[in-house]
Image 1: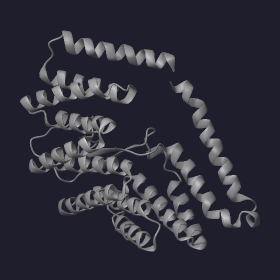
Image 2 (image 1 turned 90 degrees about the horizontal axis):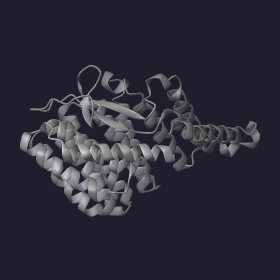
Image 3 (image 1 turned 90 degrees about the vertical axis):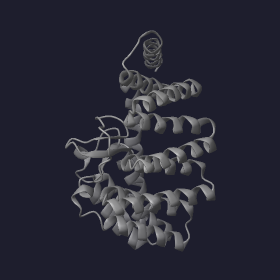
Image 4 (image 1 turned 135 degrees about the vertical axis):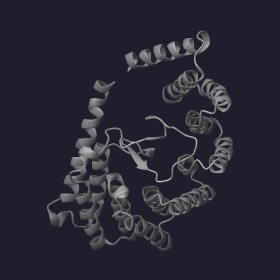
Length: 327
C-alpha cells in the first residue's frame, strides 16, 4: 500500500506541474483538471484543492462550451462539496439539474438526478428519503416521456429499494412491489434485457420484500428466482461493477466520448455509466440472502443455511486476501 500511495503522490505532482507550467489547449487543460480533481477526490482528503481545480475548470468549459466536460466536473464537484457540507452540495446540484433540463440535455439530467438520490440516501433523515423518492419519480416521468425504458427500469428498482429502506410496514412493502412490477414489465424490451444487473437487482429486492414480510414459502421461491438470474452472468458483468444504461433521447449540441458519466457505448449510442457492486460481491450477497431465506428450516434441511453463510464468508475472505496483490 505504501508503494501505491507513493505512485499516487507522484502522479498528482505531475498533473499539478502540467497545470501550472504548461500552456495547454483549452480542451486538454479541462481534461487534465478533471483528472487531477478526480484523483484528489478518490485518493486524498484534499477537498479544498479539488474544489478550486474544478471551479476553475468549469469556468473554462463555460467559456469554450465544453458541455460534457463541464457536466462531469459539476457531477464531481457536487460529490466534493458533499464531503464538507451536504446541504451546500444539495443546493448546488439543484441548480445544475435545472440548467441541464433547460438545455434539454436529458441524459445528464438523468445522471445528475440519480446522483442527487444517492447523496440524499446517505443523509438518512425522513425528509431526505422523501426527497429521494420525489427525484426517482421525476426520473421515471421523464424516462417514460422520452421512451428511455432502461432508465425507467433502473428508476423503478431504485424506488423499490428506497421504499424498503424507509419502512418495513405493509404499505411500504406494497409500494416496493408495485415499483418492482413496473420494472419487470420492461424486461422484455431489448435495451433492458441486455443489462443483466437490472434483472439481478430486481430479484434481490423482490426477495428482500418477502423476507421483510416474514413469508418463508414465498421467500424460497424468490430465492430460487434470484439464484437462477445469477447463473451464467459473469461474462457480461464488468469486474468493477460498472454498467452502461442506454438512452433513447439524443441531446443537442453534444459529442460525448468514451469516458465520463454520460458516454457512447460500443454501438455508438448515448449511455449513462452507473457503478454497482462487482460480480464476486453480488454472489456473496446472494449467499447471505439465501441463508436468511432458508434459516427457518436449517436443522431439518441438512444445515444448508449455515453452509451458504460459510461459503459466502469463504468467498469474501478470498476477495480480501487478493487485495494486497492487486495494489
